[in-house]
Every structure is written in structure tokens, then in C-alpha cells.
Image 1 (cartoon, rainbow, N blue to C red):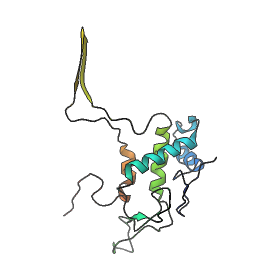
Image 2 (cartoon, rainbow, N blue to C red; image 1 turned 135 degrees about the vertical axis):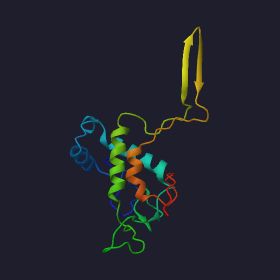
Image 3 (tube, rainbow, N blue to C red; image 1 turned 90 degrees about the horizontal axis):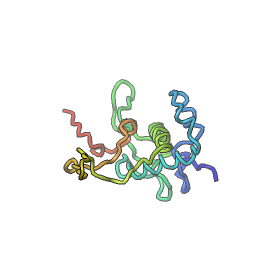
Image 4 (cartoon, one colour; image 1 turned 90 degrees about the vertical axis):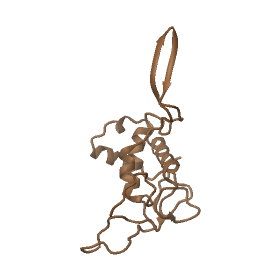
Length: 174
């Protein structure tokens, strides 16, 4: 069965925010030849979308547009931050509840190329501070650490779509 891409109508069976054709064009425009080598691009896009569901579901601005939709987007009352109306910012502007923002598609395509070569969400483990082998094996862990991969480029792409206070950045403006 072919990849079912969310088209903004809130499909109950969608599997990805981006199509293979969109990902091909996106990565080609950036000279990313790693994507060309991906054997199963549909699977990579599915994994990327699933990772986004696991990571961002509780952090998005707004609400799912339909209770029956498979993915988090489209959304209603999802704030469009930093949108200029005329010469000044006037009130709050929202995304249409029938669109998947380009930032969501871009993040999906960035994650897909990574999903093709490694698991996006690794099992948690402690970070090793030092190891030594001399008769007996010794391992020292960094206190309080967990090893979870963070994708900074994806977080930066999606930052404008997250609810206030959900990014963990702690930025306060006077």
C-alpha cells in the first residue's frame, strides 16, 4: 500500500506529513545526497512522522482539527507567531485548520533522512563518563544523565508551532 499523506483534511488513516516527491525535492534543493541512497523512503517518512507524534503531541499550539484524525496536524487555534499584519503585529493570527504548515513538513523530511540510517528514538541509557580495562572492567556514568538524541535542527524548525512554555528554552522578554 502506498504512503498516505495528510492533505489538510484530517484524514483518519494518514501516515506522513510529507510525500516522497516532496522529500525528494526538499533534499535535492539542499544537495542532500544521503536521501538519494535511501531504499525505502516511505518507511523513513512513516518513522519520522511517528517520531514527531511521540515527541511533540503535547507541545503543539492549538488543538487537533478533528477528533478522528490520525496525526496532530491540521490543528485549530494553532498560533502563527511573528506574523505581520500591515506594519504592526495586531492580535493573534492562527493557521487555517485545513493546512499542515511547511515547518511540519520540513521537520518530517529532516527526520526521515535520519530515520533511514538509525532509530530516531533510542532506548534510554546512562551517559558514560569513563571506561577503563586493565584486568577488571570499570565504567563510570555521568550522574543523573540519560542518553537521548535531540535533533536541534528539527526543534528549531518547529519552535514557532509549539505552545508557549513547551519548548524548554525558558526565554522571557521584558
